[in-house]
Length: 154
Ligand SMILES: CC(C)(COP(=O)(O)OP(=O)(O)OC[C@H]1O[C@@H](n2cnc3c(N)ncnc32)[C@H](O)[C@@H]1OP(=O)(O)O)[C@@H](O)C(=O)NCCC(=O)NCCS
Image 1: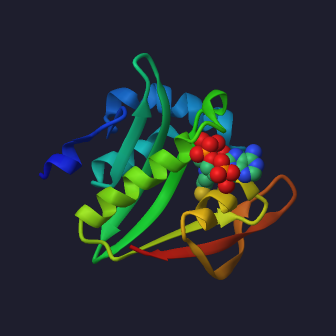
Image 2: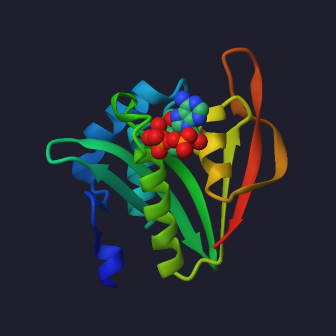
């Protein structure tokens, strides 16, 4: 494993199963339809690339992606609501894209709810471009919600 994969500056490191209580706490405060503990555990056990961002005391964000056959798929990216608006989401995304490049990905993909303007704004400002829509992709309070598919050349 390269040095860049093991550790990078700024409290960014690989997620472990010991991190899951903190990660799930943030997940539940962040999403109406949060991932379960089993989903996170499966991601770790199936070798997805999972990372946390932390201060001296606490985990304040995390991201999960798969990197396969030169494609990176960002599956989750989340910052603790108490730490948003301070550049942490951008830092986490940029760190993860560095890892994806180290793993020889040449493009990154993700889906985001059409209503999630904070995330859309972040991704568009980081060079992602809209390449399509998945109709009724997400559960919603009333029915289903479309996903915007975004992609970026790395
Ligand atoms: C999306 C998310 C990760 C952004 O994290 P953050 O730490 O608040 O973001 P940053 O402070 O790094 O801001 C980065 C950019 O995001 C966008 N953004 C962040 N907060 C925003 C807000 N309240 N309104 C509009 N745009 C916003 C802006 O483009 C911002 O860039 P700018 O500061 O140059 O304007 C965070 O809102 C979050 O965890 N949301 C819940 C989980 C989620 O929806 N994840 C995305 C799933 S695909």
